[in-house]
Length: 379
Image 1 (tube, rainbow, N blue to C red):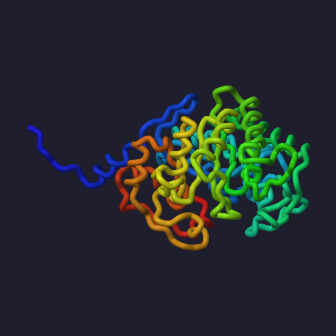
Image 2: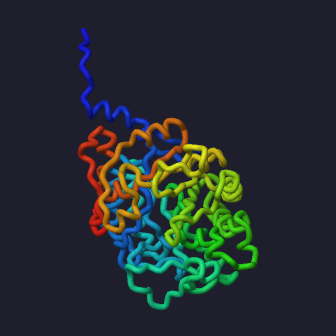
Image 3: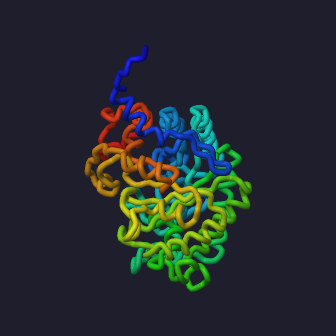
């Protein structure tokens, strides 16, 4: 005889979030679930060397059911690529040995990991001292329209930077990373090439929106050539920039499709579509967010991101505003509808390394609010 005993509330919640914990496979990408840790700069690697505490930081989240870890932005071997003495480098024997420890720890917990290769371009860091001898480089020597900073890149600088990305990707594969993410968002170098407000070169790397993808396309092609035909390449992009939250590369689905097409053709396997609030529609007349439109237009797998699991968006949080845990119902519904394939979680995982495990187990009542104090804690 069986008894019809209602499932505990936690068990029901766990059932509802189960789609987040289904496996994902596309080409050479194989993940145990749909959750990724979003890349978040932490500045806890003195002299650019990720030490044992960095390995512990990533391993701790892998051990708590995060399927994919995307590292904080890490610069290739290009002097102008970073603006913080404590961000981890992706070059040099000591730094690469540190990254090897990170990879080993994440793999030991059954998760996958991609480094995010990152060049800040003409982007000052007002929270850190200027790096002695560094001259910022960018398409046209401006931080934003009318705001000069650093110097415009010569043709030789562009070639050297493309080669640096390719070498970083080659090393990533050699170290055992499961793929690589190229940071093309948020007003950093690649996005400065995309943005008409920062790119007025006049040499074939500017022009209309499609022409301005040339630098990114050549990086993607070089990364593909330096790795393998099936080595996963993720490309992160955004409409907004830190210099201008209202900036938009594409005003319509047609423009977005034209922008994405050359990037996809160059070899992107996954698009990481960065928004400040994942639930906001990208264009009028459709509920699809940026990831949803990107998947519809390219047919490629996509990752959504933007205040997942929290009530407030991250810019306000960085200014000191607390953000409370929020429900995941809308996220799950959109995932099940096929709007996106993967979900990147940032601040919620920064605040609580057990966030994914708690969600999986239906322990939403144990989720923590995010406070800006978490930025100063490395756990």
